[in-house]
Structure formats: structure tokens, C-alpha cells
Image (cartoon, rainbow, N blue to C red):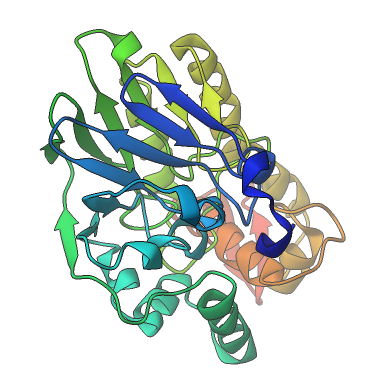
Length: 313
């Protein structure tokens, strides 16, 4: 659904204590997302302003800062509306807000694909060429907005600087919400198909989230608001399990020698036969990470330009 045909009156806001969830179209279905407004007694900030924020621009409150879970196109689409306040991002992703080519480096695209996606980011996602100064944060940094605190939880894998935000306004888990960014909890599973993605970092980030106690969990895409920790952990288990499902399917496929092009065409991340923008490149990068670690572990060997399961592995 394009931005132009969204009626802002159809977009849902939900209030939880000092927080307002700005739900996107269809619960944040890409290219839309779910943004978060935090109001403390001293400051108000917005997290990951997206296309739904742009659609609401006539009724947005004043904010004092913009926080980004990471710098992908859909998470910064509304950032241009806040040029007069500081922008915050993790030190490993901040360059994505500095210039368009710095952002393109995160994706790692080349040639015509690079040019087409760059144009889309500049137009459909309103890349802010003349923006505010970017302030960096790091893992464990805490910000107090006046009775509401935000703690940075570095959760790389999707990008190098991807972070979750633990937002608390009291002493109990019921007064804590975790903004999960692109740890989406969907059946699709983790996305680690960019140049700045890392499969094993993603696995460690998933494990780290198991130790966080909160009463509310918010994904940027698709699932939206999860209202109990037990439900969150069940969803996190299923989400993380997709990594090993892909790896098991890959091992079954390369029981006979396969070239990388055959592996890409078979589709392990996307549905069989699916085509489209960046699909081949995502399959190449994602399966390449799996293959690299299987080779390191001695479970797979690479010879004659093919991958095959190592006998007696």
C-alpha cells in the first residue's frame, strides 16, 4: 500500500503509561512500521519514525530527539520531519544517517540494483540529505527523559548496530516495554541478508533477549505489540528456530554436490520460485554465512566449485 492512499484517521494509536505506539498500516507490514512515542516530564522522543509517522505529520507532537534502532530505509522514513532536534543511533550504524552512500554501504549493493534502491530510498522513504547532527550511543547507555528511562541493548545481526530499547517508567516488569526493532518474531525468521548482517551475531542477540524481563514487547513489523513475557519467549523460540531449519534444509540439499548458484536458485530464505528485488543476493549472503560455518566445523567441504556434506561428519 502506498503512502499516498493512507488515511491518517485509519492509523491506530495505543497508549501505555507514558508511551504511545504509532501503529503502521497492517500492524507495520513492510514498507510500513510501528513507531514509538515516549513522553517524559523533561523530554519527549520518537523511536524509528516511519511512513506512518509521515502520514500523521499534521498531528505529531513536538519531540526533543529521534532514536533509531538501526538505519534501514523503513526506520528512517520519517526522520526528515525532525531536522531541528538531535538524531541518535548506535555508533556502528550512525553513518546511515550521514549520507546516502554511507547508508548504501550497509546494504552492500552494486550496479543497477544499487542505483534503483538508492532512488527508492531518496523518494519513497524521504532520505534526509540535509539532516541533523547524529549523536551515537553504545550498549548499556541509559537516557532519562523525566520519569521514563531508555536503556540501549545492542543486538547486532540484522545490522552491525541494531539495538533494542528497554523503556521503563516504574519498578515492575509491567512498567517496562522492549522495542525490538527488526527482531520481528515472524514465521519468516531472522533476516541477515545485507552486507552488514551477521548470522552468529543474530543468534547471540536472540539469546540475550531471553534474559530481559518486561511486560510489553513491540516489533517494528508485523507482530506489533506482545503483552506478556511468556508469549514473547514462545514467539522468540519459533523465530530463532528458523535459523536451524534453514541450515538443516541446506544440509539435506547438499547431500549431493551443489554449486552456489544452485543453492541460491533452490531458495532457503524465501519461498521456492520467488523472485524479486534483491532475492538472489539475500539468498547468496544468507546461505554463504551458513556454509562458511559448516565448512569451518568440518561438516561440509568445498571442492570443484561445489559444496557437499562431509562424509563421516
